[in-house]
Image 1 (cartoon, rainbow, N blue to C red):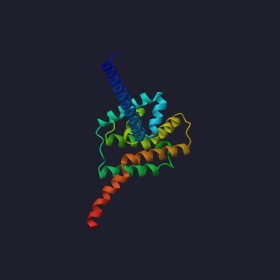
Image 2 (image 1 turned 30 degrees about the vertical axis):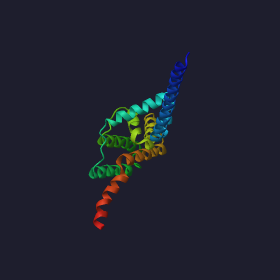
Image 3 (image 1 turned 90 degrees about the vertical axis):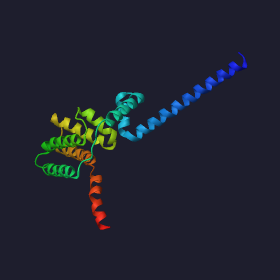
Image 4 (image 1 turned 135 degrees about the vertical axis):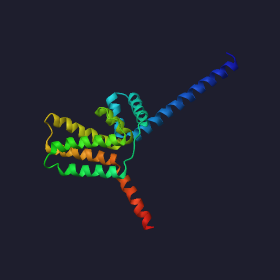
Length: 193
């Protein structure tokens, strides 16, 4: 091989190494982004699907699917109506724990639908929620597991109470309680100035 051939070969090897290095860093950065966004859901998905590559593909597909949804904030009147319904539901727990857990699940579904989430099967709903609400999707899964156990007659009153607590965490996140309170406080703050 002459000198020019060696230079071309060396240049090609360098380009391949640069490309591989760039691809490696891109993948690593993408993994970090997904881990940050999805939190524990990332690890659960890796475990469920058996590989990091499959899990990351699934999580990216979730992101793309949810991007097409028209997730809407609630109006203040809708937020107040849902909040009142939740308060009434909680007040009935002592008299009817099983019924309240069923109602809590129904109210969460109604809230999700009102916000613009499609109502597929549970796993699809949980996956869709994990995109924007990764911190609370574990509560949804825990509540649903208790509902399933209750359906088999295996859940006691304390577990039913825990299900309502799990639903409440998810409900408050979807209701955007903090944001609604801030929005309601803004006009009062402006009037005070």
